[in-house]
Image (cartoon, rainbow, N blue to C red; front, side, top):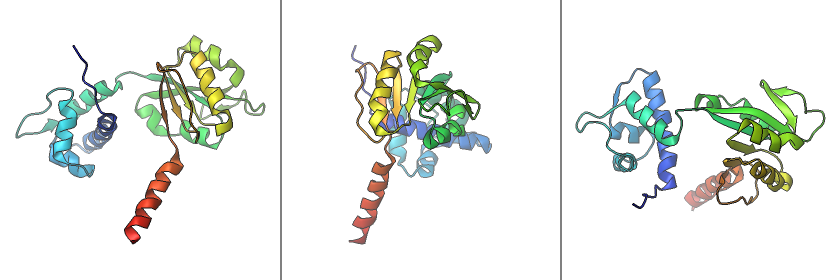
Length: 210
């Protein structure tokens, strides 16, 4: 049987739905409709229903969705019902900001170690996370069975960091370096370049002026 291919945009929206449902639950809301979810995220009710339909039937027609139950189902789909071991390459300003970002832990991602090549940083801690010599990276990933590697270093060394993560048999990489990185097909990888999104904003601002 052929497995249905889920559009990546749907997975992104599921993550947004989960955060929205978290906020509702924290505010004591127990039932929500697709219309309310769509309104809260500037989307359409039809898109919400379509996204959820990829994974089964949720909610009751004419009543809506149980907020906590739907959120748990989405978290299960996203693999967020257990902890994910992550390691970070780069103990600079961006790396420090990522370690101190509370959303990582609340969503189940635990940065267990940081790796850097600066002697003055090795042996220190950042937000309670130890900093190791990058020479120890491969052995650490294999020994601790880390699953996600985060790259937050200048682009000149990003590919080298990715290669080390691959040697350690990492499962997935999130790259913040503004450059193209290549990894084997069995390694999931996504890149985040903030300037790309800034340029989308400036394009839209310029377009709206015309």
